[in-house]
Length: 238
Image 1 (cartoon, rainbow, N blue to C red):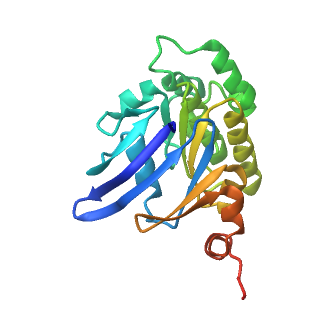
Image 2 (cartoon, rainbow, N blue to C red; image 1 turned 90 degrees about the vertical axis):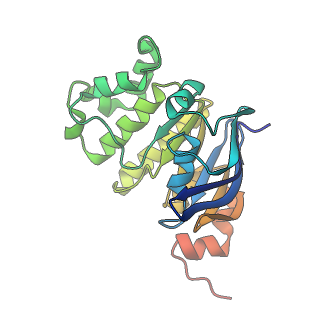
């Protein structure tokens, strides 16, 4: 039994079929990458897993229990935490207050976990009392990830964590994701930086216009000519 099982889900925006019966699974302890061009359905997939959208057909199971009819706050209580595209920090709240919001399902934030987040993200400790809206893009991404960690996730959903960030910050973010995974947190990452994502991932799936068209290990997909041509900018000659 996989930690996450997505079985033949279809999601619609009105008459438009955004997801056309996709299926995939995520094993406990894995990092799994979802790749695809803009509009392929990657973000819709994550939103459906985290309860922000509901499928019109198909089933989603988490730890063997069906969850596709549950609201997002119930899924957080199960340990599914979502870091959406664009960071979505609370700009007029301090770094510390944002982190406290991440632990809203508990009576009070875990002080040991808070200390661990500050250890993992020392810049946040330096800016603990600073408004989140005044942070740089990279610092806001760190805050968004740390805020999700305060919810004690079993499954962490990351949507485009490298978007708009400088290469040095991107490497730092992926190093942090690798460290988070090493603590036992399962990660499902949506990312257009295919080289970074597949270098991190145990396995990956490729979406095109709402359909799953390719899957394999991270190494297999990195070596695939179609991936190299479409996502790594390489010219493949035969």
